[in-house]
Length: 229
Image 1: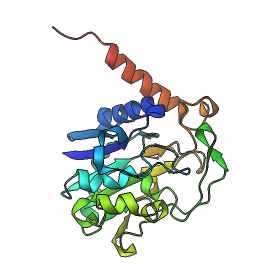
Image 2: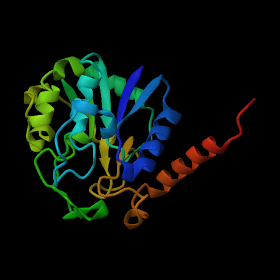
Image 3: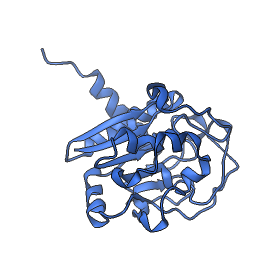
Image 4: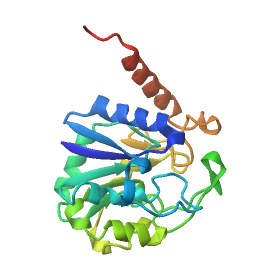
């Protein structure tokens, strides 16, 4: 069983469901998908939302090890993604780097824009987007206590100040391909609409938009199919 947490924001609910559908439709192993919803975290998450937090899950993602009881491996993903490959193949990366605390795509870039979806500020910082897809070795992420997540500077969380650099494993960039920042890549396994998903009018014609809408329609057809008695 692969446990996947997807960040959930009410403004992008369609993105969550479409991403989940794209994962499940291609997976060859059992996958458990949970929306990471701020409204369900109760007293576990107490900090006020800051002006640079573009989504409700900007910082709640770092509670995944706690929510997993610091056991096993868990995957966190931003909701504005589309899975184009069998997510089971991520197990190969886990087997390759079993001693790491977290596996990420180590992007090295500066965002091209000053604003992104819904006219939000495009915050620029070192290790930008590393935390948008994380495979977490939960036992080795015990530094991410609720107390720490509730009090640490947001940039410390996103820049992985809570672990040694040697504990950060590397994923091929195809697992978190940044749409609009990188050139079109037919081999991308997971594409990330980091500037804005095609469900926003301003990004309806971005790379991979046609695939996203096809996935959305596939999900709708499944939901509308008659149920057997």
